[in-house]
Length: 535
Image (cartoon, rainbow, N blue to C red; front, side):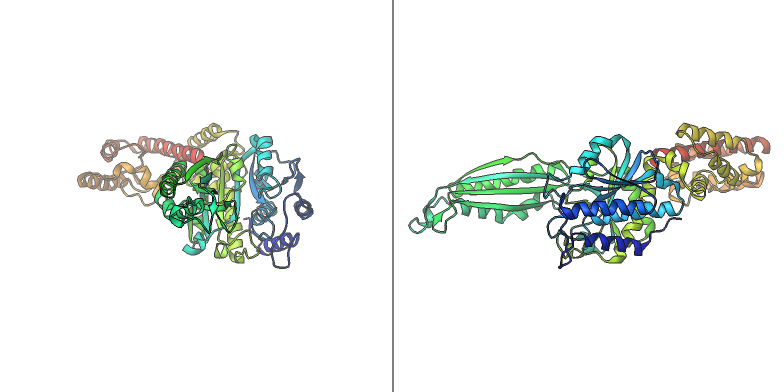
């Protein structure tokens, strides 16, 4: 089984941080700089050191994969460029962890490594360019060769740490809307114009912005907004401002919330400007829509978090990421680990080493779980023998059946796998059938979540019907020597009880054939569900 090498992961992070490193612990590795290209060459060499194939594409993206693998691939990675005086983990963690995942799988001889590709995107930050440059180019050039995209990142905010969560599953990347606001008053001499007679654009601006936090909370308690640019004109200490120019940025996971906030802001601005005898104008710039993560990938990552047993939560990302570029082309998902103090884009950016290791482990398991969710047959064909059999045994508890179906790999498509499963079952004998039948819970006594879902018709059944099932199960087992088995999905408790009573009249040989047929239906339903949902 593949295992993350924590010392190797941390050593690679340290080596990458030294490229463009600053005395204060920060990193200067702006896209296109000498340090940025040194980091890209280092990463390509590191990929090749372990026998993988490296490529720097025309957009400047660094790619790594198993030699001669053809795709489509599940892309793992992030970016290695930084803002000036940036942190050592923003982007870098996702790239180094992705490489460690691919190395670990390759070293373990796991053929699923052939389905993965590592990437370090060019110019995510947009300091020297437009931002998301490399991911946009890759999405345009090679989107049809991507199975999906998965990224590990530091949160860059305080929520996980504040709540004691060690992992975060991203549900969406927020939409961004920017408003250009102009307030027109009247410039006048600040020493001679009485306060009550002023048309002070600055005062109107400050009064409006003073209630911004409460206004946003009214629109959506989770949304955020910021005024990072405010200019008063003509900008002299002894002149009443005749104009105030404001840039307001709003971020939320839903366009509707942005619309509510914009309308509330407009109403507040117009009311205050009327009181101050000023004229407001608002113009909305073209914004970025919200980017929801793929539900299948989100569900896969949540299953991993539950298995790991560490505190986690689902949350939206308030920062943009390369997933925004790839989402129109393929399913995307993201994992977060906490940022100490919520600090990022700063030399003080920090996440404890145990959480970095946990994030890499979650990325490894998340990649395999996501492969199974997005391409179940492809995952099944290259999964280790033990994992393939375990999956099959969850559908039908016959060991010989699972061995033979697993031995028939690879299967070209889902229909071929389902057909092989059915043919293999009917090629077995009574002992194998009984083995599978005995593994099922009694009708009316489901214990696991999947069994309770399959026997959903039992819920709310009258006590007399439930009692009839208990007694019927007892009589059936006494007569035939194995448990009563029926495809429960879509059947009511009354229907199952009637079927049980009817089948009590069968002779044993006939009844075993009937039970084997029910098992075949149950097996097909479970396999089909896994092929559709990857669960």
